Length: 328
Image (cartoon, rainbow, N blue to C red):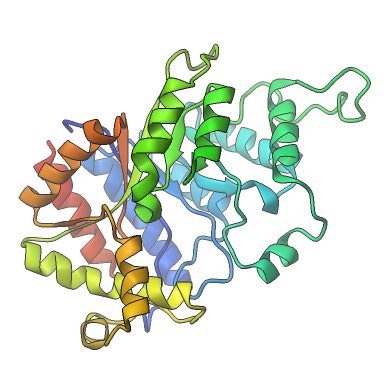
């Protein structure tokens, strides 16, 4: 491809589709993405959402690794507040041992869910930056000699936890990524208005590290491609309704297209959808290719990660295929 393109998968759940089928569809799509030449395939972590089934990205990564051979696989991301740092490092070292050189550990600082589910995932409240520091110490051997965890050896000890990435949608994530000297992935698929500022801050304040002497920025973008601009907008209609329902606390699978097209948004709901879709790339192959090609240099991104939240597997396959051909 002219530009490195990757895929962010949330295992979208449509009306009348079992969440377990959405999971299986994601694995099938990972194989398609590899065949089409995409660079990496990441699974998100979300909980207690009727429209999204990616609650265990590490399991999906392991299964996808078993049915692919080239494409990089990762979590976009592992949400730090939900996990014990030692367990995260051991999980991803295990994945790296099974798929050497193909694993990405994307780290997010939000819980990826509502407060009640977050409490159920992690009963004790620990400051997220302390958890991140502990995770890095387990991976890099950074505990002081007298620290109680200094003698712990995460297994398997002869491999790393893959390539570490910081995720973010604000300057805070950009600052941490720059300070650590690691690649940075910005969540433009729902916060595009802040992308330029955050990526610029990351690049301008980057502190080189042994593994990553230069900054590397990836931008996630909501993308839907179909044969025509009109058909792509039609396919995207359920996403607008799904975002509004999610943001207003309505727990439902993603609506069918006709239901979404008939829905009458209130002004407040329309504002929610418009904010989420700011910067979204939706259209025919020609339209999408032109917008993606312009978006990377405009935001100073090395790579783009496409989020195509369509519950119909064939529509997602077609979208990725059309983009791959247009960007070849």
